Length: 265
Ligand SMILES: O=P(O)(O)OC[C@H]1O[C@H](O[C@H]2O[C@H](CO)[C@@H](O)[C@H](O)[C@H]2O)[C@H](O)[C@@H](O)[C@@H]1O
Image 1 (cartoon, rainbow, N blue to C red):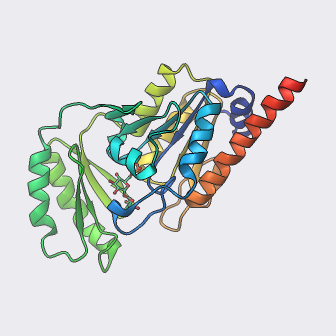
Image 2 (cartoon, rainbow, N blue to C red):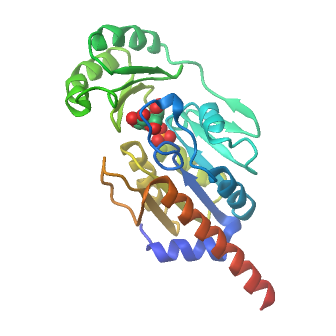
């Protein structure tokens, strides 16, 4: 079941207590940068999320990062009511506490198996996230060709380790199966008895969350944080993290304006 964009936005503005605002981190709140460890939220982002956190039912970040990394890189610890679902939903951070399953037993094999696969590949970086491991080609001389050359061997390594491959912007992640951003978002909507939903994302890993918005039957909005690297279908397209934050600010403005007008009516 689908609803149209304006139904989604109207529902969020008219009944903000029933709204869930879901957000990806890298490429959506945080600009893409060459070094994954140097990523930080766009200036003013934490303040926009704090404002929204006071206005809507819930703000939830659903990210491929470890949840604690997103909280740190986003300076998000003070956002009221914030929930961060890390590792595509395997981990949950809330009010400073982290809940996470045991590390998948295939991770050791993936970690050691990646080393010979990338040996001699200039500019290729391994990012060890404890519960998953990612290989990045953004800093290679030919990032696309290097990514393509790694696809089959990384897929074979993941299969042998009982893991799945999550492709993204110049990255292949080896991570545990059975969870994705759609499963995570859908469960969160049920937990909060959401009456409307918005999700903003920028990459392939966000597509299941977009699908979950559409399948939820709720008034919903999908927002694509646009870049030159990938095209994704969504209800609204904005220009990267600055565009996402501008859009979220306009949602917060509309919610506050409606509350004022309603109170005065
Ligand atoms: O679900 P997300 O919050 O979008 O996280 C997805 C992956 O994002 C990071 O990689 C991406 O951003 C990097 C920093 O800007 C960039 O260098 C890289 O090319 C992108 O793929 C992160 O490093 C991964 O661990 C996340 O899973």
